[in-house]
Image (cartoon, rainbow, N blue to C red; front, side, top):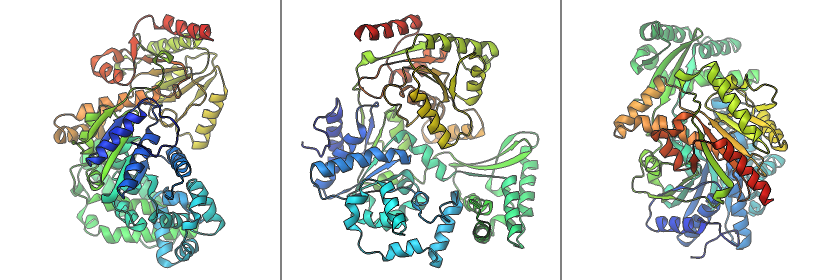
Length: 605
């Protein structure tokens, strides 16, 4: 079959992947794809889906969990359009806040932004929205705007138009829509979004990029938290605008619940009926009043956020009846916190059944059967592909001499880990990246890395600081980077030009046991035949480790060594999962093997 493929030749496994996708689409079945970095999943999926869509009068959604992951999809579509001289349109859409050209409104954060935007539009007070609605046909702009959402934003800003409205107009005539997960995965926004762009799920193929993130992303749409500090700030906002509304009864309710449920404990499950009836029975009016007051506060004070709006959104979810929601109260440093935790996104999962077909893909979609189970697509085609890169360019070892297992953590163990890291670095001719299960372990090991300059990830680093760290580390050629697994430095980042010659995975990034994890395991046990611990605890940890380990080899010419530093990587429950993604070779004498690996590199040179 001839595919709309932008390159002259396919990479290993790429043609096979396109054929598998096409076969699945022809039988209108979903397909789950596990393929390592370098196969070219994005190009293969877009080419196969677009070819099939054009032959069958369908549309395509390409959805990602992060804005940064839109770029390669846009580049692929632009190149296909140019190479084949196609008259297809596509549009790159991001969240409304990231497309807002109103400088006063786009500074507002979180829930308050969407409430403020909706309020302005309803009152007819957003000139950018009004001009965009009245603007002439925008189809002639496709050649300019098909380079991505940044160009669309710049055009809209220069012309005083709402970029989101312009994008929505373009999307009506688009064969492909590149967007974020929330546009389709979040049931609160899906129907409105689809209606706005005049597309239907039934006539759309949906590509889910980095699909191992789907459930976590969906859970976040139904999870929320407040504290007594949230109520205190909301009360201060009311006072600042001269509102007579009093929230003292909410503070009292929180304290009363804590006395009954917490006692001397630091966390406890609570229940919907723990909230006084005088609050829950009038919750709709209370929420409306708080949201109006919150918007008034933002408008008057030019604040970026509102605790009143946050509190309203939290209480809006309180009365939802579902055994997939856990209500948990915690006490930390005298602060009471009330959390609504979504254990499983049962309100999002039905969207997969609405589509013509879904293509789920990731470099760590393992085990495929588990993901098909959790996503509710048991009849899906399951496909896994090998790495296109030379196996000789990557060596993977296990260091069983240490562990970060909680009961074994000690100063002596941290010193041993630091000493092993220094020994590894001495044998590697270039940068070494070390990924830890937590900042606690990272900081503890860092203390014993004497006389070594380390690029170190810190808690709550801003995006600008993270980007600077990445840039500076890549420019170096003999440095060490310390970072945590599951963070911004271990997933979705391409370290260019083989700037990492070695990666050490210290420990296993298991989620810290608490009531929320216990509730998730219990829920999944009931829903998925006793798979709770495996699905919610063991496998996600290994996936985070494998994601971090994949940062080094990004092209067929890259060479690197990977060391899994924890005795538990030799245990069957972890070893089998790791070996399904990484070619682990040996557990003893790996220091000598690292040295020989790089000597062979020099010999080849």
